[in-house]
Image (tube, rainbow, N blue to C red; front, side, top):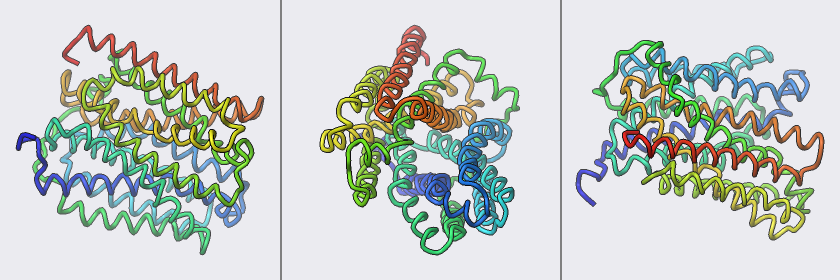
Amino acid sequence: MPKKDMLNNKQRFLVVTLTLLTFIMGTSEFVIVGLLTEVASDLKITLAAAGTLVSAFAISYAVGTPILTALLSKFSKYPLMLVLTFVFVLANMVSALADTYMILLISRMVTAVVSGVLIAMSMTIANSTMPAAKKPAIVALIFAGFAVANVFGVPLGTFIGQLENWHLSFWLTALLGVVVFIIGVFAIPRNLVTEKTSLKEQLKLLTYGRVILAFFIPAFGAAATFTIYTYITPMIENGMSVPTRFVGIILLVFGVFTIFSNVLSGKIAGKNGVGKLRYTFIMQAVILSSLYFTMNTMVAGLINIMFVALMFYVMNAPIQLYFMNFAETYSPAMKDFASSLTPVAINVGIALGSFVGNFVVEHSSFIHLSWAGGLEALVASGLSFIIYGWKQRNKTD
């Protein structure tokens, strides 16, 4: 490998820091899912009201992240990353101290927007500081922080919250935030070039039809996965007749497979990522649809579920690089805003997938989730074909 494509020690330290950051963001975002019963009981609200904490986070992330990212992009990255990490710590401390639903809701919404901007800025920093040949693998590695959070961070936070009280889980994420703040002081480069631009100029990125269509690729890709994932526990227990005591182990193995999904994502993104996604989503559609035939058989169903996990994050790195490369070609000033689009689209997809899943289960049965997820994956594939064709007609993208 050419020496210019190798990472130096500072770059390695930065990659580890940014991956740790996404791990903490992922833990903070998803830990609430395992604590809804405890939160509802302690705050004396219904379980449905507690569930709005999850949807409010996703909506705040999707709406607030691109706007705040565009507004803050003119500031120097070094102090901005540290200030946002500090705000993240404070928001999690407020969540830990919350004794009413409204305080917890507001703190979670602030956490969502700050997390989204931090992740977008992390992607921009990685894109600006890493060798071109390493960017696909590094972007995939940074996204892997979310997968590792689901395997280790969320179960740990949930265990602590259920063992003592849910407030401790947010003290944990606040403490982790302090750790990454201290590391970030030394790891984040201080001399990054900042493009001075207005919100209006940033939002011009949304005037490109290719960008709008590309946004819906990860949205439908995530929706396909989360249509199934939202109901994965009852599918395993009721559909595959797996004893409840083994479900936790199965979900742990599922999480490990999602880490391999990030590795696969980096490989796909290495060359002609969007072109490969055309067929990747077709493969995902086949895997999801085949659950219709395997769900009633324990061994075949569990193998099928692990293939679902293997496809969980494959789209992330190719789409993230597409957005960043597009902005770099047409207007480098849009890079920060472009970096925010993939995580925002994924959160839109999570909300869409959960909605579709709820609709199917309410009007049909778990087994038909397979067809719904497969259809959403085919939509993502179709959009990938369109974007790839567009890209081929204009080789500069």
